[in-house]
Image (cartoon, rainbow, N blue to C red; front, side):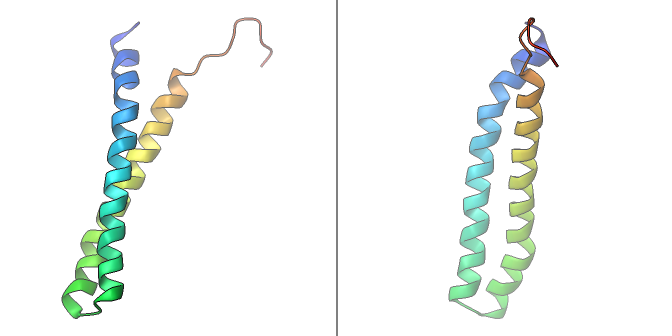
Length: 79
């Protein structure tokens, strides 16, 4: 097992957990701006909330890329 494979194997579950937490934080910020439509909450949701949501999406996409790189085809399977 190479160092990169070991790092990717350990990182994928952590990235998924981080994406879930970041997604929930972003959702909480957006819901707060809907329930309390004050200018500060709306600006906070539009700037910080969307930034946190984008970070959650980036974590998820990176986890998918790392996980797909770990998958290997069986030696007798046809491409």
